[in-house]
Amino acid sequence: MDLLLFRLYGPMASWGEIAVGESRHSANYPSKSAILGLVGAALGIERSDEAQQVGLQNGYQVAVEVFSTGQLLRDYHTAQVPDSAGKFVYRTRRDELVLGKERLGTILSSREYRSDALAVVALRALPDAPFSLIQIEEKLRKPVFHLYLGRKSCPLAAPLHPQLLTEQPDLLSAFKAYSHKPLLPRKQADGAAGQLIQQDADWLNAGGERYYYWEGEPQDFAQDINLIKHRQTRVRHDQPLSRKRWQFAPRQEHYFYQGGE
Image (tube, rainbow, N blue to C red; front, side, top):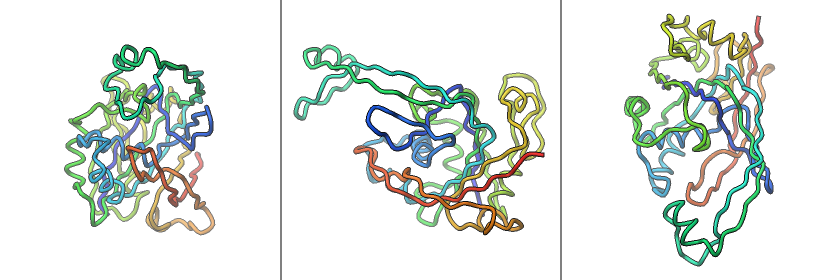
């Protein structure tokens, strides 16, 4: 199989879970909606462009290798926003504060983030994919829109370093073949295939443990591991249905844990 791998790292990330009331929880690994949102932003697809958004949603499968889940960070968040006034649309934050001054109210929420989390994502194109992996790789290097990790307040802190790996026997082989670059801007040699730079692993406290999540068939992950006994299959509500209406559907994904030495 052909796969496009790239890494996600930042001082803060927020991988949204189901929102309940004022609580905005974050998972400890990237959601499919966040990954496709980042890819869409790199390609220059507007959130309001439902046709192209649907193409992204139906054209790709994702897999994730987690090196560090980071530290949980909670923020008590307040924001002033005007309530809705018919069909009037506030175009900017200034419009909200000036034109909607008389309608301002305060929204309270508790938001979760993951601090210093690192993951590598594998993107697989399905037969009806609207963009080739080569096209996506080019745009990840020179994105059209600003890229962030789940929320606009969570920018990337290191290059994505996308790598297109062709004719891989399975997902695990591709993850092990990914060439890691130093996270810190220092003159360090690249890591061994599938391994972090030792200095990066030390300050991220990333040992030998790995967490893998993927969609598709269980055997897509590895050919020489008994996945019947050593995997879980779960449901996650992060399949985008509509970016305009913030609607998501459940999807099935598999989970495999690889312990450290």
